[in-house]
Image 1 (tube, one colour):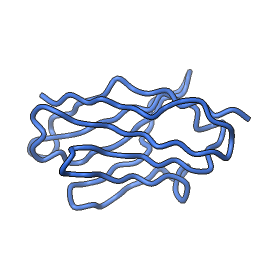
Image 2 (tube, helix red, strand yellow):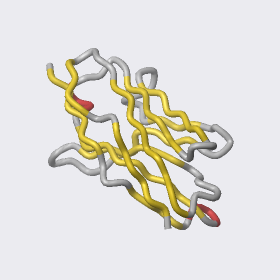
Image 3 (tube, helix red, strand yellow):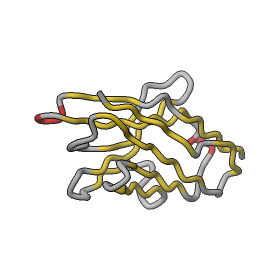
Image 4 (cartoon, one colour):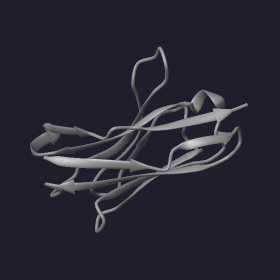
Amino acid sequence: QVQLVESGGGLVQAGGSLRLSCAASGSTKSLNPMGWYRQAPGKQRELVATIGSNGDTNYADSVKGRFTISRDNAKNTVYLQMNSLKPEDTALYSCNVRTGTYGRNSFWGQGTQVTVSS
């Protein structure tokens, strides 16, 4: 089992920045990939960004050039630096990690709210 604790959400004005953190504990061997998803009210959860154990990254088109995902393997922590935030970025952001062969085990954090005011 892997436990995930997110932090860093909050209220920010459009154009501002936030940095989300997600610390993993428990069976943290081979966390691959680590990522962030978000769900806005009335919408389906969507991928924001993922990062593999080798550092390869993947971003949703809507956040490319504005968000940066990174990880600190020594701390089992994944970060999401969010710049130039827009009101449409408002959502519950959840951390996800996968372990095991082909990432068959999936674990979720409780989520952190990001609200961007116009």
